[in-house]
Image (cartoon, rainbow, N blue to C red):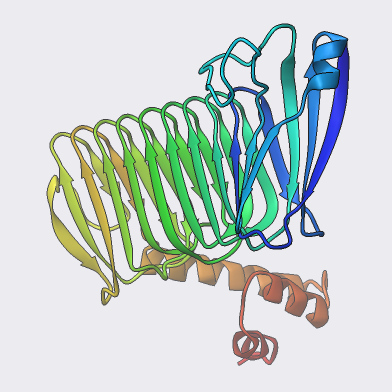
Length: 319
């Protein structure tokens, strides 16, 4: 049979929540109350489902949740690594609600992890092959994975990012952080539309490829150290395998070290940026001249695209 069971615990005095699992998918969302709410979908024999209860440990400001059931043939706390079934019981999926402003940790082997809509002080994830998707505000992020992919979508400023992987691909969309380190063996690393306001980004890989682009041109010192990997960029770095160069007046450092991994670095050429700006302004002018939009509509569009008030007023006044 299959059944969903619900559990709830008060965590009004708790500052950290840790979850231990093995293989089920885990979805974590925000709880508006200071409670941890758990829904587990179970399948198996009726008696096993009725008896199922996760193990909870509360010590001071720490809350710890063990999701997998314990077999009566093993001593309590024995971790039967790699197996989710004990007798006829299996955990199919997990839906977890936790409050904001906590330190959260999750360790699992192969289950898919999704963390959405939360605001956390710190997030720590340890996984072997499970895919990880993060779309939440976090102040510090630490991830260790063997072959699972990581997909991170940034929505706020992060103090620190520390990601270590062997073969799982890593993708970061719109990240904004002060300090970051990414270490891999063969993982491909893709960082898209990164905030140029950072201090240090250190990327190290043996054979994985690395690509990065910024929302605007950064002022950064770039250090490259690779044996045989190809380096491509929108600035002149042709032929560089080992060395350094500056973009603008450096206030940050970007390091890339590899054996054979390729790197594609897009800093946002000043010339290209100017050309794109000219093209966009010409489009706005054509729209106004053809009366396809009013000045108010153009103003709203320019605000949406990130133009400041002075630039908008200058354009609309025809200066």
